[in-house]
Amino acid sequence: MEFKINVFELQTIFSKLSHVVRMTEGNFTSMIMVESKDGGVVFKATDGTNILMITAQSDQCELISEGKTLLKFADVRNYVMRFVPLVDTYGTKEFHVIANDAESMIKSTTTFPSGKPSHRRLKLATFNADGYPAIVKSFDEAQLVMNSNVFKRGIGRVLHCINPNEVRKAMTGVCVTLMDDKIVFAGTNGIKLADFEFPINADIHHKSYIFSYNFASTLRNVLDDDAQVFMKLDEGRFGYVKSNNIYMIGNLIVGDSFPDYKNMFELTNVVSVPRLDFYDSVRTVLDVLDTEDNSRLSINISGNQLSLKSTKSEFTQEFDAEFETSLDVDVNGLFFESLLKDFIGSTIELWFSPSANYIVMRSSESPNHTALITLVKRR
Image 1 (tube, helix red, strand yellow):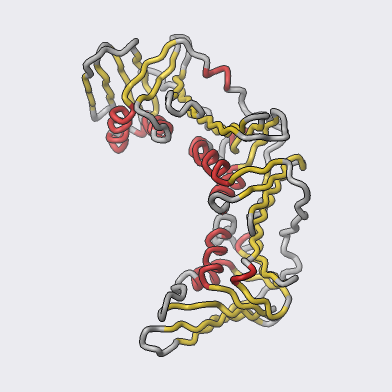
Image 2 (image 1 turned 30 degrees about the vertical axis):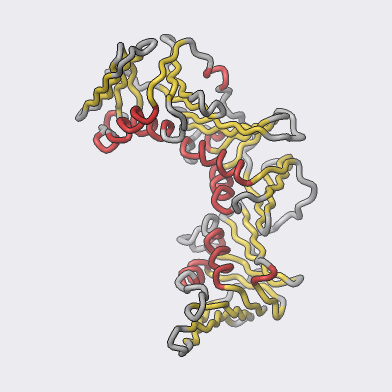
């Protein structure tokens, strides 16, 4: 196998593969398979469950001979990421990769303003690629087509709510619900929950899929901005995603249902507070919360006064007009801040009910975004 590839192109590919490869492991999950065939160069990586395949852009590489090899990812990545792509008279234009059964080699030439080039070469151990488990099913007709910005933003809004080590399997991933006119992203760890909606047109009518945490987080990191994304999800426990030069097969969580949470948003009382004032006070107190007491933050809204209290701190702010109702609750301050920071608009609405052990957060200026947090029991 022999090919040449643009430095920036290879660095971009390796940055994306790093979200799948487990570099500290001593097995195939710490390796990548490189295959040159049909006029292109393909890079494959797997974490044992999810498979990511990236094809080098045709105008950024030159195929000299076909073949495939298996390389230790960390050894190659740590080396190629040190190079500066060529700009004017300084940097490296391309890598020349040569691999055979005995060893692999990466050659390059770096130029300097002095006009004296540096010729560089890295030798690498070659492993047999025949046993590599990244078996990729070909992608046929897509069930769903959307813009990558929608998917990346939706995942980004809810991913922080998920604990991938949660014992309740359905809560270890991102729930994606497709309806005729919208897509809904949801994530929860049982204490906090975020729900984010986008308007789309879909041929799948009200069906939910749970993307594993690693599948969802990898897609968020590797999909190009503002690109078309093609998905096929009705294939048992695997989802298939294709976009530009990226093809990924990821794990879907099946056999368990995501919590039915929508009816929890129907509460009777609401108090509206200035979002920026509120968030700045909550953010300021984060580092002095008592982690041994559930990072307790006491919120009291009464009359024309907003108060925040923790074991070591107290914040009080008075307003000209009185609030429409009173609220006096304790929450986990760290979790509360992580939800609050994603809202936009001038005010934040805190919905509650005397009989509910949680509060719901909304903003009239971002009606597609809802969050929920359970209360910390009063001492």
